[in-house]
Image 1 (cartoon, helix red, strand yellow):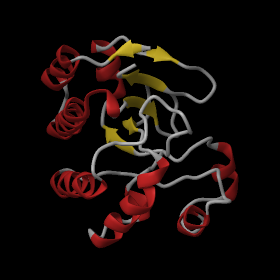
Image 2: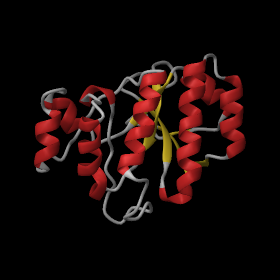
Image 3: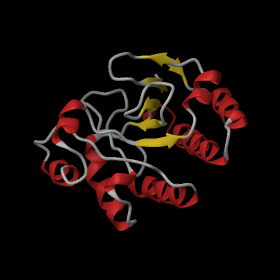
Length: 182
């Protein structure tokens, strides 16, 4: 796993091909440094061929805050096709506390207003009723079953630009490029 440092962020922002990519990286940097090691950000392939399709930043949130985030999404009029959530596994290094869902929703809402976020909600654990009801209307069951966890992805416009300036480890079968605080 490669550490995501401020120098890395600056390198990506300085070399991004357009303002949208820079905005996403700056948002990620701000969230990551605000939360330090309580929030892990990862670059992840988004249902596309690695290094070719759109990519994003994966933000892990404890399952305990997911309901609040969903409420804030509705209140801020964010559509389920605008965000991808990932819930933490029990005992994850993120712990039980993370960024305020309300604050997070405001930041994401502003980012979506400024640049637009292409997103989707997926969830494999259909036993979680709210997730099942919320997700089945926007994604097919096969796709839900295929993913291990819900994911939140803020899309970047150019994965190749990111890969050029950061040392990113390809994790294999699921097509994820990961950068994390640990």
